[in-house]
Image (cartoon, rainbow, N blue to C red):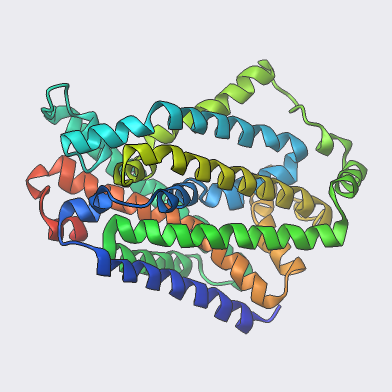
Length: 377
């Protein structure tokens, strides 16, 4: 691996994402509604790509691939359940969110939740939901920055704080420039890099190992349980196991940084188009992540060798960067690294903007119309 080439490739994409976010400021208006919901006129393509990028954060690149390395084919049930639950919310919730948020003039999820049937805000609900949003999404954003910095540490040996600071600096630049519009634009660009990087890696692994038949044969030779579809050790059966992940997918409605995107779409009738785009991307990307986890088990069979349980989990969660280093040329390692890092940033930026909305729209509503207060928060 040529570290200089990797760094330059990685840096190029980060600068590109930052530039896209900054460019969005040319289309911004100096109002809190534009800063927080982009004046409710965003194209459904951008909404779909942004929502899927925000939803598939470090979990997909780090957690799911690591779990697949350890457990094998049975990891498919996590993705299946999550997609089913997420799909239910698209039919059940998102169109109503778009319609009612505009009707009530809500620019944050807590503001929408706190409105009664007469359009009057319930102060106690508003403040409580705003504080919860700030505390939990603040911690969630920190977890994303940690996931990105852990990858940089694994590849370059950089101190973990450096990757977090880098992420903070980039997110701050484009969030201060264009608010939610900048977040949506950069998320859409990041989603293209994410799926391109994963497709390149899986394609390279297929050339090395072979197709699904060869992959399954080699997995079986390592451990026959790796090709078992049925999860092992289920105390309450497969149905409840899958149902847990279905409810995980449904719980996207409890994530304001995702739900706010449907307040920003250009019309409630555009939700159907956005849904179709979203699930085509989501299903394909989930499949590539699962395949990356399975191929990494064959190509990197000793990744967790000799480690105790906790250390083994940590080691397998670095399967994607380790696989990239082994299989890709230096230039493409930088692309993959940018895809992984951008996945964490695409979630963190959205969460930080939701925290801003929680402060100015919910906890201190006298700042509701202040564009400056939204940016400072």
